[in-house]
Length: 366
Image (cartoon, rainbow, N blue to C red; front, top):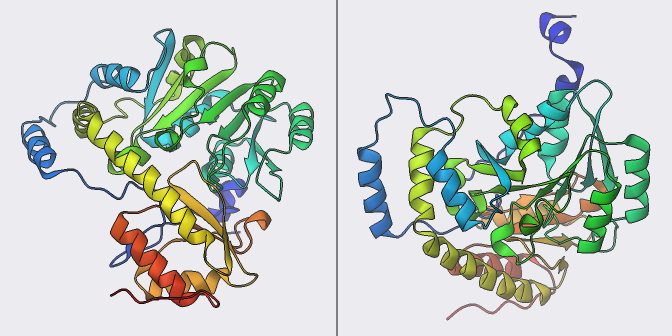
């Protein structure tokens, strides 16, 4: 046994590092990003703001101005506490550290966000994944309630809408899960800009529920900013696991500036929602693939058996990168995930798919 095998924890050695595909030179439709850049007038104003920023001092450790803006924009109840993180991933890690311990369990549904499982492994938590229903990726309530009763999870994560399936779970089912859970339930609303459903106004209604949000999907993925909102008694304890100055000066300035121009980003997300509807309609008309309805900024599609990889590689040959999910989970066999792009990007995707899919009529653009 070498030194690495001797000292690196087996749970860490057993998992793979989070993989990010190289998108150089490709239309990037693989990572659920907002495809729109900032208008030039905002870029110029932002550049002046950054130019005058002093980075020789530590940032405000509590990001007070930014936190207040987030409260206002996201309509977080005044009674709720708010905790900021370097993206949602850091918040998931803070939660795992705060509620972890020997023999404790983190529970979620599968297929779901990969970081729940990975961070459970990092933190020494047992991980339990309960499979969604095969037909429509809805919650298998019988199996889920049995798992809650058996494992008594300290943490339970529900993505709402779910990633990578894009669907919303029934509100009544989520309420039953919160009521049945002995520990903390985290409603992960990463895709809130693309749906009208949310639990954020219900913070305080349940004594074991918090809501997690991110600014990444809104259009600020490069800033890495997430937040957790919930009862103050929970957040004051979770805050003890937060590293000092975790939200840097440039992120605080840039996010605050962006939120002061929130109408620009709301217009962009409205465009994405409209484009999602159009793209879903076009995908439904194609032979050989089945798209699933989505409340997020991506669409999950199932290909004919054994065709996912060839379509994925074929799209790369046409200069388009999407996400190949085949092999990631049994329920995702033959599945691909497509981020909704700009009109030009979506048109290029549809054109390429029509060329790749047998039985789909392709009409060259004039």
